[in-house]
Length: 246
Image 1: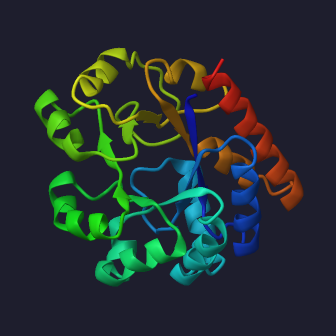
Image 2: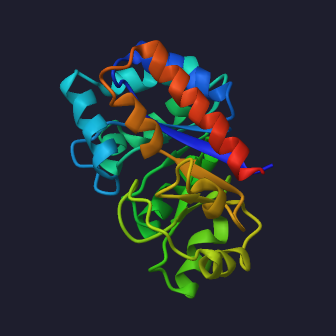
């Protein structure tokens, strides 16, 4: 069974909605949830996620809201935080990581924290039984891929192409996948550009997919009620889970 990871922007449009949406996704095919931490300059994300980030901040998102959402969601759905390093660093990593574990979180995804700098936090993560998800990109050399994934846990985030999330660029991922899988038994999940139309092709040879912009696109539809947004996201999750396993 191949896995589906879903990204949502925490606190958008409000905290209670994020909790309801997260739990609904967990009941409709999502294996792992990424709670996105709104940030003013989300450099790895496309225009949809960037807009949701800015909207959440304008609506008053605070880091404490992430903690409150996590407390309600993480005990029921496998949950990770996805955010930029400054958001976590400002909270004091030595205090934040133990708190995250206490809330039931299982790990973090930090796209702007280079592998070499992440090594400084290895012991902190391990001592709290949390994972720091490893990224590999098509621009990485084979030696660098081998180094990055040498201690990868839970899954490896394989960037499907060089660029930003959500643009859906088509590429032959098989050579890249092969260069990763020859060095690791850790599952490899494909992210960037995955939606209902591309999921079946993107997951070939991989162990799962990571979907963000396709869900955020629904959340940004102002004409939909909260109930309608949750239903559309749940339906999308079921479609993609079926596509990657059919």
